[in-house]
Amino acid sequence: MSPIFDFFLDPYRERSGFFILLEVFVFVFGIASVVLAKRESILVYPTGLIATVITMYLFFKDRLLGDMMINLYYSLMSIYGWWNWSRQKEGAAVVHISRTDKTEKGIGFLLFLAASGLNYLIYKVFDVPIGPSNYVDILTSGIFFTAMWYMATKKLENWTLWILADLITVPLYAYRGWGMLSLQYFIFTILAIQGYREWKKRLNKSLQTS
Image 1 (spheres, rainbow, N blue to C red):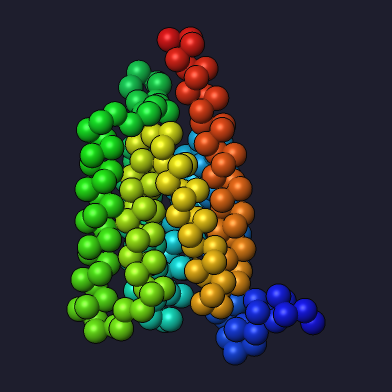
Image 2 (cartoon, rainbow, N blue to C red):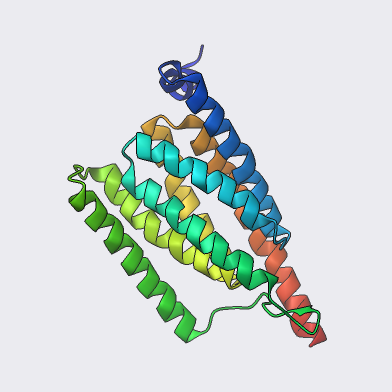
């Protein structure tokens, strides 16, 4: 077998069938949630919740606390996004695709700092050694959390942040032996680019008809 296949498959030889099955579920539901987000379907949230809750358990067992916290944020923000997207007034959706203004950009930056700082503190509280890859966790946690908030409020910039953080996460998970999740984030990157284009088209169309 080629070195590339060995690199991705070797870690799974020591993993239980139950854990591999859970990762398959995360892979399938994670991809489905991004596809649904691209289509602006509210089903992105229940689908994504399944993936994030399972992922929290997997990362907790592997002591990857930064990654676990990212998925806790996903879960909580998914509940908020589910509620926010479902709001209606006179039979029409209240929240529409839009761009961030200066205030929202500022809030996003503060969320990035807060999420990153909180993850750093969690490593310290649980006395988990912080290596180079953990600092990457801390960085991406802030980017992902801000992206999730922007998606929950239907801001176009959510896709830009997803693309950035996904590109960082692909090699990180490959390095850690999470081959299936690394592949998943590679697919996420492609879908996020498509999602940005699709939402931008919808935004431009709505601006033309308003």
